[in-house]
Structure formats: C-alpha cells, structure tokens
Image (cartoon, rainbow, N blue to C red; front, side, top):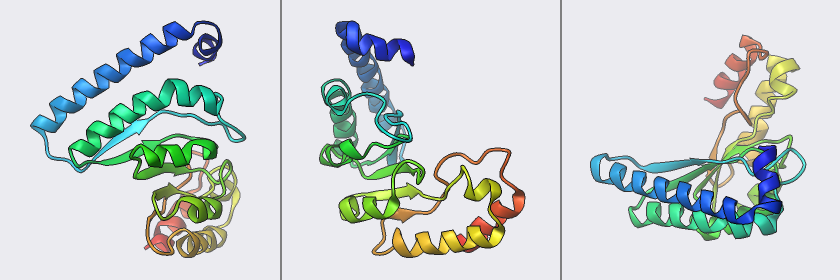
Length: 189
C-alpha cells in the first residue's frame, strides 16, 4: 500500500496505466458475467479511507479512481444492476460523487470513522447504508444488553424511511463474545 501511494505522488503515469488495465479487466469480466448469469448487483471492494481521513487526497481520488469507477458503475447500471461498494474508513468527501456516478449501497458504515446519523441526513435519500454496529468496542467488550440497545437505536435512526442494512461496521473477529453476536442477531430480528 505504501509503495502504490508513493507512486501516486512520484510515478503517476504508472498508476494511471495500472488502474486503466485493472478497469479494462473488470469491465471485460463484468460483460462475461452479465451474458452468462442472472444476478442483481455488482460488488466493488476498494478501501479509500482510514478512521480519520481518506488514504489519498479527494483530488487524487477524483483524478485517478473516479474515472475508473464511472466506467464500472456505468456498465452495471446499463445492465440494470445495483451497485454495492465496500470501502472502509472515512470517505465522506467523496460519497456524493460516488452517488452521482451510480452508487446504490455503501458498505460498511464504520461508526469509528463516520457518524451514521450524519450520513443518513446528508445522503439517505440517495443511498442505502450497510453496517453501523461498532466492532472495536461495543461488540468486543459491551454487554449483550448494550448491544441490543445499540441495534434498537440504529434501527430507529438509520432505518427511518428505509435504506439501511443492519450489520457490524466491519468483519466480526474472534474477540467478539458469542453472546454479543446472538444479542445483535436477535435484536435485529
């Protein structure tokens, strides 16, 4: 990761060629899949954020990544597929642009990085959110009752008006007690 980010600064032509090649490969793969299989959505997975900020500047993202996503999202939309995008971290500066080019579902809503209520207010009319349950403290050290309370709060706040898929903010790890996973699942139902 460090090397490619350094290349963004000092070897831009290489990064552009690499991203163009990856995009072409993805587009050709999508065409094959669309011709052979019935499915509702595509999933793109590419992390643009850390817990505090984006991995690269929004300007660099706009110049390097956005054109590639525009093509990928565009092909999916042309084939009437939903666009699901995974990006960890705080990507608030680019969410509106992702919506503009065709994003439907943003995953994960990592509450340690982005506040769900703000996202719902700013982007909730145009986007479905997936995630929101804290994995770094609540699921690991909270009580089952605290987990149930947080699930209830998220169902009210994020679920208002639809457009919300309740799940952990990121993958559950081995340090999450089973009783908290059960509490989350039961409260979600």
